[in-house]
Amino acid sequence: MNNFFLNMAYEEAKKSYENDEIPVGCVIVKDNKIIASAHNCKESSKNSIMHAELLAVDRACKAVGDWRLDDCEIYTTLEPCMMCMGAIIESRIRTIYYGTICKNERMFDINKLNNRKIDIINLSDKRCSDILSDFFKNKRKN
Amino acid sequence: MNNFFLNMAYEEAKKSYENDEIPVGCVIVKDNKIIASAHNCKESSKNSIMHAELLAVDRACKAVGDWRLDDCEIYTTLEPCMMCMGAIIESRIRTIYYGTICKNERMFDINKLNNRKIDIINLSDKRCSDILSDFFKNKRKN
Image (cartoon, rainbow over all chains, first blue to last red; front, top):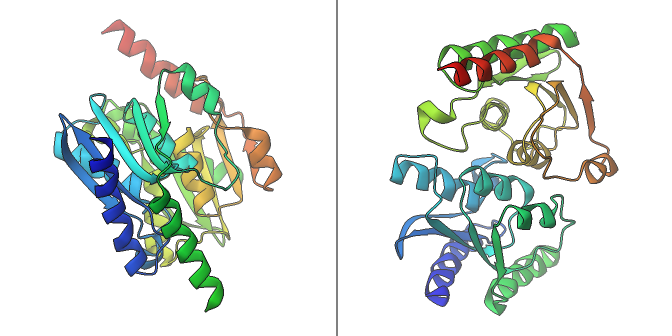
């Protein structure tokens, strides 16, 4: 099912791309069903918390009616930033699949996350990195 | 002015305490005026992102109409968690004052934050730690 859910996250990332936003998309899955999906809309919302994963955690909590999402998994096209990784941890999601590594400096300590038995799995999906490269290439061109 | 703004953050923390929430409060300041304030309401909202600092960043972005808060300062009663520290960094706030240190394991790398020229200042305020101790003491009693 990994490919299916990452594909749905990718479909979300495309929405960001079409809105001239850094293309990142994400879904949260419970019992093999998507309970929340979101895409980055930081620029259009003029709000720095409007990253895909944070929005998805917010929506998943509302869908479940609980801040605990410990039986959920998250699929995101890009390795989460510190804020989003923190939101995932706060909600007790234990399995994080991401499509491609983030090239920015990592601000959190991945070993401390592993100590907490959080699985962080890089699915190395070429489309997830390509959509980001395309976005930044176009930005530089314009 | 540090005392004044930390006091306002403490007044927010008292609201959490009264609602049986871990007492953390926060204000964001621009040009010596409070533009956003918030308190932790994770339990009552059943939503893991509803920490004081994250809510305050959200409100400050809305107040300013921009995701960039680089001319703002944040005052929070407790050293921020990874999610909230990430939200503060995403919004480019450069000065963080906090009332008391967080005793949980720190998941982010404080040296990497210092490398980005973010000032993180512990104001060592006894009331900010006392309200937390009182809260957890009462929790254990009940």
